[in-house]
Amino acid sequence: MPTVAYISHPDVGRHDTGWAHPEHVGRIRAIPRALRYDPELFHLLDHREARHASHEELALAHDPTYVAMVEELAEQGGARLDADTVVSAGSWAAATAGTGAVLEGLDLAFGDGARRSFCAVRPPGHHALRNGGMGFCLFGNVGVGAHYARVRHGAERVLIVDWDVHHGNGTQALVQDTNDIRFVSMHQWPWYPGTGAATDRGPHANVWNVPMEAGLAREHYVSAFLSAVDSATVGFVPDVVLLSAGFDSLAGDPLGGFTLEMDDVERLTTEMVSRAEQWCGGRLVSALEGGYAPDRLGEACVRHMRALL
Ligand SMILES: [Zn+2]
Image 1: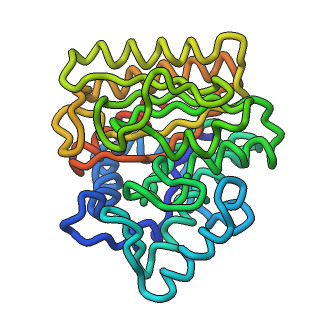
Image 2: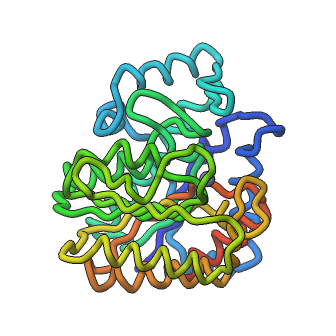
């Protein structure tokens, strides 16, 4: 039984933002391309096709009228929700497959399947709000997943960690009112979307925001992230870990100024895996967020999945 599932769906390629948009379909194609250069890893993974999240599942964290609006806009051929956030004809299928991948990863982790999974999905999710898309994101894949783990699988405590270079403001909004979900986000500051101050702990102090300057030495980001994770889990043993894996925190990303390298992806992943092993039998579901240099993104996903193993 493989310990790591690789979950995706052809529909995630149907979210058509245009090639001039940084979040274009070439990002997702870079992942299987990179995986082909690592046949050993390819054969070790449990390859799974995602299911599509249902309206009811999306409504665990989103306003049902917003969910219906996205579906309707896609059916009508698409629209722009803001300057950066596109709904195309294929976006409903893509976005529901993206969230569905995370739910599938949770079903495996809490059932008889792989303890850990990586969800190669787009659009990303961590900026999506309860009643609106934002920052390339339509549905909060990880935020919905956290509520799903509680409702469907009886998880009492859920930890979400987010190392995307941008603040996971959507995830925070979707989970901060639920005490037993804790959220750790490290992000560039000041930077898009402008939220995520260290003093913003949410109304129940279950949020750990770690704003960081651009251009610091790599080790600062790694140690700040891990120490926030450790603070967030004092007296709190999660039943599952959800990871917002944004690879725009790597050096050279066109949308970020962090300096992480592939070795840091491996280190951060390994550290989270060993914590998950201690806390909850290794249950960890990772979902792709940002990462806008496709070749670097593909390589990072491979290193990440190797470390998940
Ligand atoms: Zn990002």
